[in-house]
Length: 212
Image 1 (cartoon, rainbow, N blue to C red):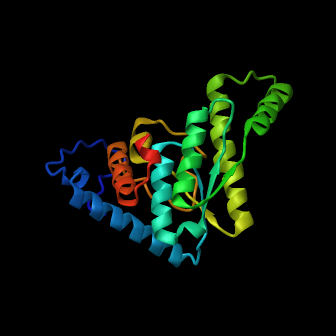
Image 2 (image 1 turned 120 degrees about the horizontal axis):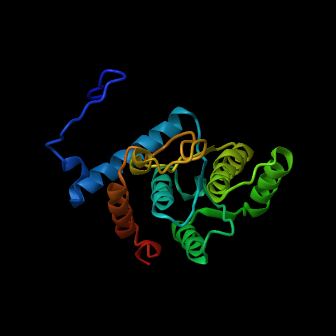
């Protein structure tokens, strides 16, 4: 911890040195090595080898998958795509192709029926119309609150949180989903850093999916 502001007070700080978010090859390589090292050592510290993650076809989960492969090996990574009617074929295909390139186990568990059942119960029991925003949050919580923990428990594994600092700072965040997981390897990264790191790993391992 470098510095903590007094509680319940608003402070503004100006950072002179922005080298921590540099996209230079050396900076990216060092950041990547540190993240992999931390994840590997954390898994050792809790005596775990297997890791479950939600693989959506987006850049955040793609980076977590690549970090996981380097930290624990592809044979110990289980990727799960959890689509609903709102997920496009493009993102589903990207998730599948990335898993194939990384040589990790990949499974599809649709959430449409379970979400529909939950929304119908709310409307029938409480007489409340489930609007689109609540329904989307139910989607997220079904993934992070039901499917991933259950799969991890079944495999004697742990599951990741794929949230990042930009989403948290801007409020683009679903409580009881984006913060769920045994660890959050990219939680302290801004979206710009995630994009740069993903490109770095793609070049390093010749991952064609991320160039599409």
